[in-house]
Image (tube, rainbow, N blue to C red; front, top):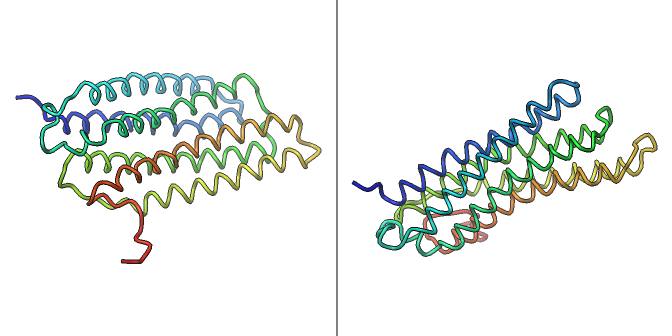
Length: 234
């Protein structure tokens, strides 16, 4: 018996998101190891390996959606059929999270920034927020995909999305602090280097928030998937 399309999508999405979270979760680890002059290059390699694995898995996921027709999806998966293009864009954007994580650690290896200053500590704080955002994103996407795969499934993701937004705002504050410190503290060398790093970390946080925005747009046409609070308080 052929596995229903929705079950296939859910079963492939879950391990992909786990690998994505594993990848991002190593970001503060590699920063800590770098600051301690520990064997951080091994963790960099782990991130690169996980990013490559994410690439493989996302190709399989997008191929699954692209190659499936209405007859494969069936009546229970009409939400997927209706939102196919948006879902493909969503999965591709989710994979950018792994790509940006890899890019950050590659820049770390190439640029070798100082680590005993407030700018570096600001990046560490941003990395910690980003990991929390990614863990929440894994939960949001998992539940969203479950709902989108089943016409009569419902879920409320308001609190989780608000948490991601709040952490992204915190990353904005930390980014500004890093850049301001870099240009105002005479003891900080190469302020443009710190500006570039702060923007890279912020790009990663922004991408995670952007993904929740895409989910909100898709869910707006799907009764039962609630992503925003009622402005009327009802």
